[in-house]
Length: 87
Image 1 (cartoon, rainbow, N blue to C red):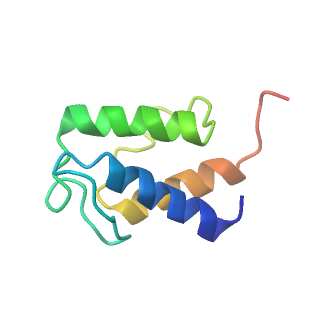
Image 2 (cartoon, rainbow, N blue to C red):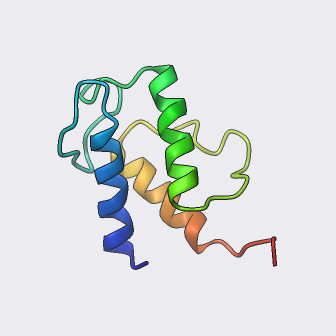
């Protein structure tokens, strides 16, 4: 999956799962302030993102500084590009 497709898919998922109701998420949208995510919704989102992009065991605390949709896009892109230890 190329970078623009990956980022578009992340925005789609984040927008679909917004606690304020489905919407079109933008990269600069803030998860809590603009999209209504609380701690439980963030956990649900992270599980969906891990499943959707087959992310395996991201390092503990790796997503601690995520506050915007772009942060998620960057994280998923970085994880997707990382070599897999499963091989």
